[in-house]
Amino acid sequence: MTYVLIFAASLVFSAVLSRVVRDIAKNHGWVATPTSERHLHREPMPRLGGVAILASVVLVVTCVTILSRLGGSHNFVPARTFLGLLGPTLLIFALGLADDFWDLSPYVKFGIQVLAAVWLFLDGFRVTRFEMVFGAREVETIVGLALTIFWVLLITNAFNLLDGLDGLAAGSALFSTIVVFVVSLLSGNILTQIVSAALAGAVVGFLRYNFKPASIFMGDCGSLPIGFLLSAISLASSQKASIAVAVGIPVVSFGLPILDTSLAVLRRFLNARPLFGADGEHIHHKLLERGLSQRQVVVLLYGVSALLALCSLFLLYPPSVGAVLAIVGLGVFFGLQHMGYREMDELYRVARRTWEQKTIISNNLAIRRAAQELAGARTVQDVCRTLGTAFRHDDYDGFEFRYEHGRAFPNGEIGSDPPIRYSWRRHPEAPRTGRTLQLDLLSATGEHRGSFSVFYDYKKQALRADIECLNIEFANALSAALQRVQERQRSYASVGLASDEPAAGAQRLAGD
Image (cartoon, rainbow, N blue to C red; front, side, top):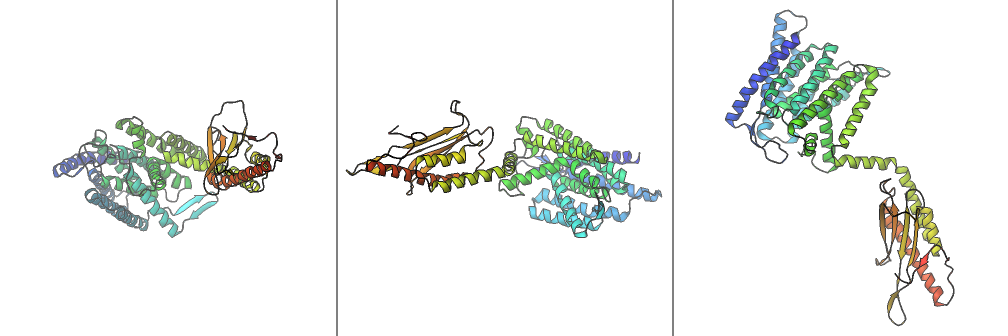
């Protein structure tokens, strides 16, 4: 009953303060103005809703702490612990408030966030111990500090990046807060129970004005402190817990903002863009591109957040850990497949090529051996036999080459020898499908003399060989071998001797 009252009181305070802050922000011109296409609102919108959220949480938690002490309750929050959480949270709030007005540098924001994370660590908000498979293991201080900073930065900025649609970040934070509250009940941490109950109420009260059509935004002074608070109380509620609770539950329950942030970092890294820059390719942007309305996107992502929150609670039951992680992993994989991220297709291609690297190396070596053997080829039959060894296997559906070499006649005219052509196909009766890779055959001086083509079914698999290996070393060796063969044929013809070329295998054409 106590926590219901905390939730209700925080909800009422937040609803009242949100309206007051909205009107003040509107009267003073403290509004968010759309400046680019990535901003989805079209009219200036009052911001600073985070003031109402954080004020409600601080007010309710302070009142509960004082009343519990005055009433002689044994379950009261130690003042030092509460101040240890309140101090760095107010620092993050001040950072967000300053960023709402002056658009601070990313490096300044990260520096202050690191300072707040260190402050949090020194006040005891950290994971000090993991219960591993082979028993409990203490975490070294330096390792614990690094993990604390990483976790705080990740969650703080994840909710900040998620704040792109009306009510999205606040709603996602609500589901994560519920999970933290449940875990804190099981761990017996009074502070996290009170803070999470107050935060949940404050978020619900604010959503009254933030859900589409929104009349106020929370701003960075709201999204940053919410993420920071959640990162801090999740650390506190999971201390001395099993690895499933200490790591699995926070990661899964914060799954949506973590996934969106991870995709943003990966996307910008792969596209060689600034990691701290903004773009319009977040998950909610992709869903909007697929024709969903803003309200539909928010409701859908609420469902995703609720499902992840529910899955995270199943991690409290150890036998279900593997199944939960598998379900979440598959859900993320298939979800991203339908989001239209080009970067995911590229990573899939790289992963597949890495998996097939042994075959690629084998094919490259076969091509290199063929280039080496072509250096000793004397006849067209030698050339064709070498090419057959290199290309007559399942990766290729066929190959062919055509080569002709210009010559100067004694009377001064310029002509050409009959071209040499050879073709092999695995299924000669079937119509040609798939892709063709064509390589130019050049003379030593760079003149075009012919071409070599490889046929393969791209629907079955991509070409499993390096283009550089084919286009440089092999193509040069083949061109040089065919030039020698043609010059040899010419020398036989000039003295009236029969060439030792085979009757089958290569076709010498007088012209096309």
